[in-house]
Length: 326
Ligand SMILES: NC(=O)c1ccc[n+]([C@@H]2O[C@H](COP(=O)([O-])OP(=O)(O)OC[C@H]3O[C@@H](n4cnc5c(N)ncnc54)[C@H](OP(=O)(O)O)[C@@H]3O)[C@@H](O)[C@H]2O)c1
Image (cartoon, rainbow, N blue to C red; front, side, top):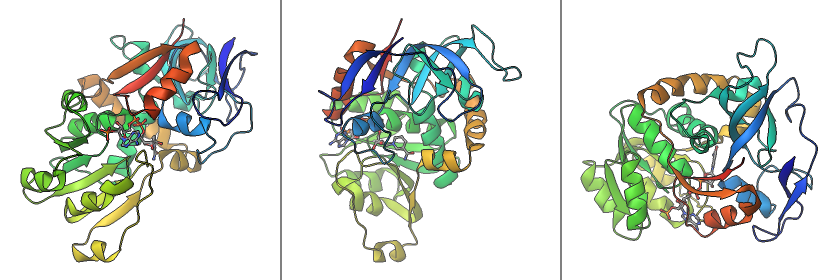
């Protein structure tokens, strides 16, 4: 099969090599797996970091990146609930940028007939992270105000859709008018520009602040994110696309009983794998109702994976970036 491998840690331009490899017969995590003919593979910030050796989990070289795929089941273990021909999305952790992938049944999920495979490849990493950040860690309830940084990106659009599906009110922070449109389409009630006086606009629009901030960006917006919280509000740390890892003077938390909370979905999933099916079940009603309808931004062929990574690196991505196969 054809697959993209990371062969050196030199960044998107030179890290990848298209290779002819043996098809996988079992998931990376072991056990009997669902074997999937891949039609689409998700491209996310972690793969960009992996191309530079900057991701927290470091796989030995060479390796096939790609944490999630969508495609058609070729074979499935007895009793797994899947059968040849089923349209599925699956979390593979690595190995997804290939014509064939293997996944654990517990991390394989059906996708609606109305969805493209590209949308299926946008489901797991971003929407499971969104639910985990909003509910498991952020304790969001219906009626809460939720502010989303990087709101037009993959995690951002997923977070807006899940928050709206849960009955929350949403504020999106974005860096351009085009991204504002993407955030509105994903369900943002209020959109503010990161290059304007957004903190004051948020305090005005939400009558004194938001209950929860979901922050995949970090950087120099962090202090204003904290200032955007109402009393007893929570800031959930999801990532650092802004580059800089912020620091916080903890007296700021004491002043109005606020919290800063880490949300690493992958860490939780590997320690407690049952969270995968549990979040999958919690998301299903939102998929059925149409609240979750993943927006796909740019799509590329498998051979053009480097350009897909550059789209993320150069801050041009909206929604989910996807590799389409077959
Ligand atoms: N904690 C977890 O469990 C978990 C799971 C999945 C992903 N993540 C992390 O979440 C973050 C977002 O991932 P994603 O796939 O949503 O990425 P994405 O689609 O590229 O979106 C990231 C957003 O960050 C903003 N941004 C600000 N400064 C940027 C810069 N210098 N370069 C690029 N983007 C910048 C951009 O929005 P504006 O231009 O509007 O500012 C962009 O839309 C990543 O750090 C990823 O590693 C964490």
